[in-house]
Structure formats: C-alpha cells, structure tokens
Image (cartoon, rainbow over all chains, first blue to last red; front, side, top):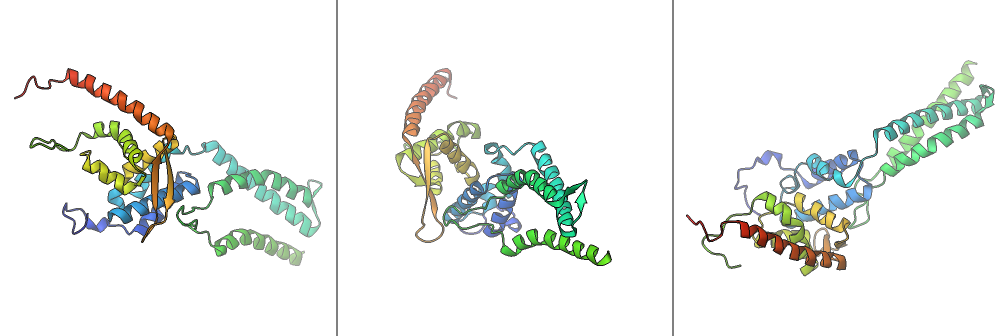
Length: 178
Length: 119
C-alpha cells in the first residue's frame, strides 16, 4: 500500500483528504442526508484512509458517486414539500415585511393593523423554517463531537441582519420622503 | 489455508456480493474490530480486496438490521476508529445463514461436474 504508483494510476487526480471531505459533505447535503449521518460517513472515510494510506478516491470513489451510492438509506423528501416550503417562506417574508411597515409607519393593510400580518407571517413561516432547520442540522464529528462544517457567527449575522437592515432603511427612506 | 498450486484467483464479483455481508458478520462475530482489519481478514481469506466504499455500506446495513453495533474509540495516534461487534440477534442470524449457505453450496456442487469431466 506504500511506495510509488505501480499500476500507473493518474496521479493528477490525487485528492487531499481535506478537499475530499468538503466535497463529500456537500454531495451528501445535496442528497438531504441528516447532519449526524454525514458526520459518521465522513469520519469512516477519514479513519479508513488513515489506516490504509490509500487515496480516498481509490478507496471510496468520487465524492459524488459515493454519496449517490448511499442514497438508498435516505429517501429525500418529495418535490412538493420543497415547493410548499419555498412558497410559504416567500409569503411569510412578504407578510412580515408588510406588517413591519404597517407597525413602523402606523398604517393598515386591507383594514388590518401590522401586528395581524406579522402574526400571520409567523404562523405560515414557522413550519417552513422548522423544515429548513431540520435539513441544516450540524455535521457533527462522532469522534470529537465538534462541527465538521461549522456555520460561522458572521454568516449567521449576515443571514438574519441583512433583511432587518433593508426594512429599516426602507422605513427611514419613506419617513424622509413623506 | 490448504493452498495448492491450482489455487484460483479472486472469485467473480457477483459471488462476492452474495456472500460479503455474511462474511463480514462472521469476522465481526469472531472479535470486535474495525473496518481496516475486516478488509485485511477478507483479503487473507481469499475473498479479494474489498474497497472501503463497498465495506462501510455493508456494515451500515448490518447495523440497521440490528446484527451489529458500532462505537467510536479514541485512536492511540491519529483519528479514532469505529469498532463493530455482533449482537445476539446477529449471531443467531449468522448461525442460521451459515447452515443455509452450506446447504445451498452442497446443492449447487451436486449439479457441477466436480471430479467428472476434467480436461
């Protein structure tokens, strides 16, 4: 298992273990494999490659092919649940923005105050948000309990902060112009 | 391990596919061990090199069936290893399938021209 490549394999496709890990996590994410299971699969690959000294591509195939070979364990959710989640998120986002404008400017939409629209947005948006959160569970390394693909605090801040800043800026702009 | 001069090469892959799960269960039932050792035992038994990409899905299916349990252990140096051990239902399944396999191969052998038409 050591020494130069006797079989004349193409050495240009030699993959670093870290690069293989990242590509495998992404491929498994696309197949909607739960985070804990992704952590198990990745740890198995790393442990096996460390024992054998093999190239991960030689031992397990390309990340995409290996991920595809594992999908029979996990049935991805039906297309309509994805469509429903996207539609509900869009509607909830629009209602939330509308409600926030109403509250900030002291106006009403279709005769209802902003709090009604914000409440409706939460009722519609929370189930969809829960579905997205379930898919995006952390990829936990079973050996150490640490995140294999950590979600940075800066990324989370940008995700939540951007819409809030946009709405506030719009409110300020409307206040100034009127 | 009574290897003669006429030892054939590795078995056809479809035969291996049929017996791999049972062979892996037998290895794990003998002693709690990890993936790399399982591949080495398979190789030593003449079942050919089995890739990690083939072995770990087999172990996962055995685990899902309740025949095997697994746990991560700290490595001496380097990353930890996942150890596999056979459960009681796994051992019962192994005994049952071993008997069925023996019966099956005897039946198949009775049909083959063993010792009849050489040359």
